[in-house]
Length: 229
Picture 1 (cartoon, rainbow, N blue to C red):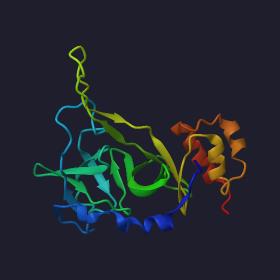
Picture 2: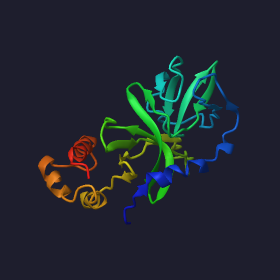
Picture 3: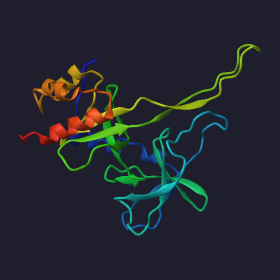
Picture 4: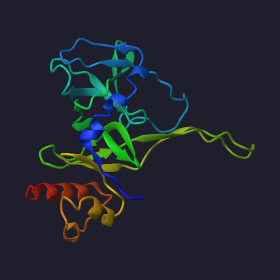
């Protein structure tokens, strides 16, 4: 399947297509940035293995779109792709805004449109590299759910429902595009050809492994070191 590059200017104009009308039970807390919260409906099964969270604990967070005086405790629901927050014993989730950067326990998240399996998706990505250069590395870290299965005979046991981590996907943000990192180096050479035509030489210098975060961080450093066109 040919790799696709999506223009951020076009993608970001599509954010209004997110069905805000479906986000019922709107709750607005006092803040000076107009950030909104929504009641969260907890619809996961009562018996399951694993967890929909990388970390179940609510931790102090800072939000670029939220009042600096108020620092809510937040956790990331990697299954539902929601930033959850508790107030007076009730569970809420943050309004998804592409202009809001969220820092939880030194992990930085942003809400983006990104290419995924030939389609455009909207969701939270973790920023992997410093946000100081022309190119930035992001990671999609999600958890999937598998329904349980009853035993077909008395000699077998039921299979419980379970949450499990999906394969991490990486993305490179450029000034105009959000590029999905493919699984093969030759495909990566092709999608980055406009930025650097000699990526193969860089691969040989560092024994580049396309599925490893450390190698991709070195790639980002290399891209940011190139003369600007």
